[in-house]
Image (cartoon, rainbow, N blue to C red; front, side, top):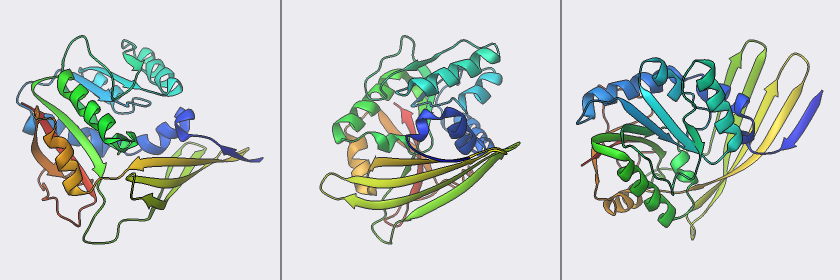
Length: 260
């Protein structure tokens, strides 16, 4: 049976988790390495804004870290908390806005690895998010933030596709840029998710909007949140031995922000 559904991939946490969780090892070991190399304190408590299904939080919880997160999507939060409960951990994921939240007790580290930061549509919401994160972290704590910058010295990447498989479930993803609204700094993206099982094929047809950031624009934003300093920058190869210098041609950046 073939079905096309106009929907958000975030409303299908099982498929989202497979698609973005299959490559968890590179991100996980990179985070652990960052905690050891760049933090100005011992890392025990970790928070993830826009945590989704908690694909990395659960790995960290299993290694003894105290973890929590928030996300706007209730379906993702239910999936995340069910995963925590299945392994005997507290259900610490909550429905919440990543640009308007407070924590009861501060954390030692946080992360947002796969560009979710760019879902924040305005400069005001992005600045509010960074202020929330600064307030949520202890001094010396880290915020590991992955972002696609818009290069100014070369053409940007226009499309990408990848596949993930678990048993008889296969999920293919194809994402492409529909264009950029320069006035509002919004990139419009198309996303097709093809889901295959032995008995059906379903295509999720999604549309996403990401705020654009050139290098100078991101640095200008960061200057308005003086509690953070840039400890180091890497690309999406997650190679701790090879930090990068961000140039006008750089697209994929992981900023290691340290709370002063």
